Length: 174
Image 1 (tube, helix red, strand yellow):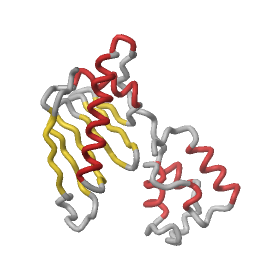
Image 2 (spheres, helix red, strand yellow; image 1 turned 90 degrees about the vertical axis):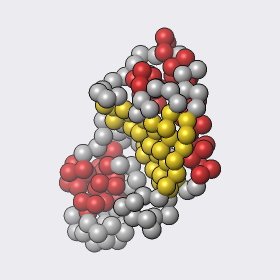
Image 3 (cartoon, one colour; image 1 turned 60 degrees about the vertical axis):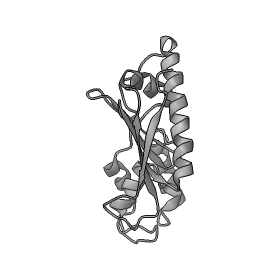
């Protein structure tokens, strides 16, 4: 077992203390840096940095970044959710490390959609019917997987299909 324990720090974002969601930084008892390429291969992170090693995942609406000695998780409902995610990550890190002989390590991130390519497929009316102030903001949310073609009321069926076709080349975790 590579990762045996951690110490959690739960807080509200300083940039906007009125946010309802919480953030968690878990300070790891062990250095998991060597396991990150194996974990990236198993969970298919969307961003991998070689030096210093970090891997970032987006799953269940959370952005999770794993560093050698800490893990950062955003958009948590409560401390209980932080505990569940941290225990899941601990299990995944240990399994990836234990099975490293059978895993091809991955040092690359998953390709992501390009915001400007998404914007080209939108009506660019800035109508705000989607709840966003501009089509560019909406495009950014689509690129992050938070919104989809069905969330733009201005798109007709053919335009929605074109956007969905473009997005189908990318992996989005829910």
